[in-house]
Image 1 (spheres, rainbow, N blue to C red):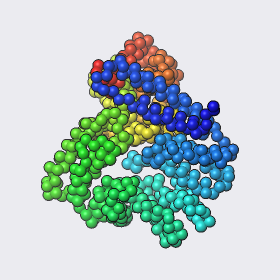
Image 2: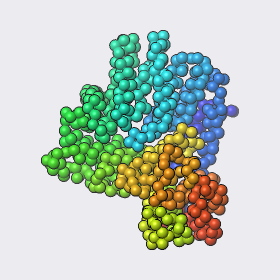
Image 3: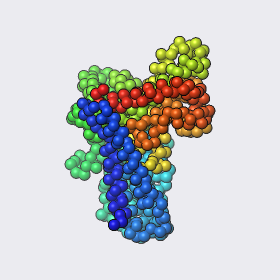
Image 4: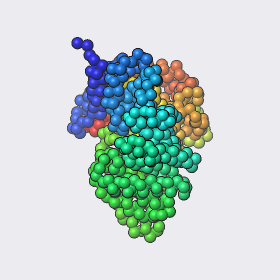
Length: 612
């Protein structure tokens, strides 16, 4: 009996879940090394097979479908599939849900079906919003023009509001509320543009006319969500004084604070542990409260949270709460600081312990975000070692940890070979003026190279959801977001105090040697005092990614000899000729291949805590 499309979607979803399990294996400490490596490799092979199967399913079910020929039953079937795949922040597969809604919007436009158009404009905007990387601290918001355009077009149907059915009206109101969603909040101009759109949307949402016309629409929930979102302008206030913005934030924080007190215990989606902090911090920024009130509120929030609570909420309270605490501590009076010193020191030590004891196997993405906030908040203090925090980011995602450790090892090996065989090519590196100085400073250069390799991908903490998409090929929109990781990594390393060498290495490691390709595109040439290491790092990065035959889909892993041919073909364009020249030595390549295999096994065993 032929498999129905509904059954094919069920198979796709089960494959998604299977890959998610296979790609996150856990092993007891006593696991035999041979078994562990075989299990990881076997899982990678199975994931690769499932990925091929899912790609074929998506090609049939979505990618090759013609929007003009979709029947009513086809549309209903696709809507059902999208509903199963998308659930805001808890989606099975937000990317494919977006592609389904993209197809459905084309069908709606072809049919000139206004209710369907409005509905699909909303779902195109909201699914793309959850794909998008939005990180105002690092100035990344890649897909916002498309997202904003979807919501704005949907909002414009307010002009035809009265002639449309109630369900369509709700989607119009959602689009109206979301037109401010992707607006940046980094500068004064950004914030004031956001507030203009906020006022425009709120004028409709709170209008007696629309509320009386549709009393069943959850207007209070929309109003609450609008105010909760406006509080995000507080990130701007932590960097800039702006009385007008501060008053607006206080107004929203007060509304949310009172609403949450009044509705305590009701809908969990509208309960937020930060609300009390938001309120006291908003008072402080508006000049109507004290830093002490903010700090005491945060101390209470963190104190009420279990020190071993590694749920997403626990991570947020223990780490993000600590980040806010350390920020506002700087604004305490001398007397307040003295009186609260012991309690703050206790929480600082607790945050340190929390990081040390955080489970190393695939903690939620929220942990990466919280840890990055911790670095940002305490960038001017060293009470918590930022290097340890960076290591926590890496260790929390084992594939990134393994890759980063291997790239660090390879960068050091290749740079050592260059120092020994062609030191003149490294003149200028870390200020070395002669080949003799390059050789004399060899230990320093190698240590810097290792650290640049180790932290080159720390920005992937912001794009874990795409890196973990092993069940199908990445969408163009997802790959666009992955390409933001060098910029985020560079900013994060600067905030952590490693601006001189580690930050530029992270920024430039995907840029072509000749400056004519790779990413990011809009950056000046790599500084000469670090370019020698970046050139080596770029080769090391490709070398590990292409030859890993354990944890990656090893059907695609390449022998070192094959990769060398590719390096040579792109010498002078993507890769530095002086680095590629190292691989002309057959003996060096043979020894490197052997050591590479042994080192990779060692790193995998360490990452998964197997006894050697």
